[in-house]
Image (cartoon, rainbow, N blue to C red; front, side, top):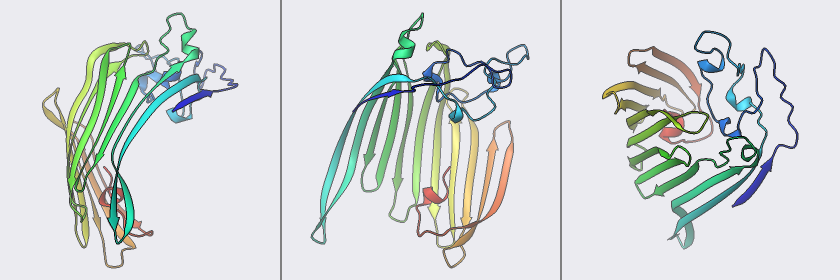
Length: 257
């Protein structure tokens, strides 16, 4: 795949309420908001005083994207009819920013994103790697799940993320390195899922969470409850009544963590 994208015209004047947006790189498009967007280290108002979600920000865009996708598809005959299923998908993408190439210290290449998905009868895995060419580091996200036909599952995941600043270099080393463990059980009248996050840097549990869904006869409504505890942080407990029209759903669709 080769694609070219450009914002023909974008007017983003600096404003004392909304902040200063001149020369913001397009690579910041997915950067979440933080306290530094509102206040600097001295407690003064920051330059990027964004008042909305980062998805609402508009960036000048003039870039070309190159990608490659490979699929391994399995064909089976069921009742004399062919069925097809992707059992492996691998893709890799990178873009080149022409606007960034005109800057004083240009770094126009984006991170290289590569994804690998494997689907077998009762095992599936998903892995994402972000390779930063200027920082020379790799952010990694991976999980593997074992499940049965009823939807019960056990899952283990791993995530490692480096602290990369706007200059696209590593600042402060590894930002987080986490293992997570999840389990889901589907019963006749109740569904349960739970998850524990364990920090490999601090060698401690950083968060645990579980959700439950009580299913009275009828399959059209239920009572959902969830409990989340952040270590050395807040506790959250919530109960809600939910109407569930639209047929059967997988355990993950009903109770995603």
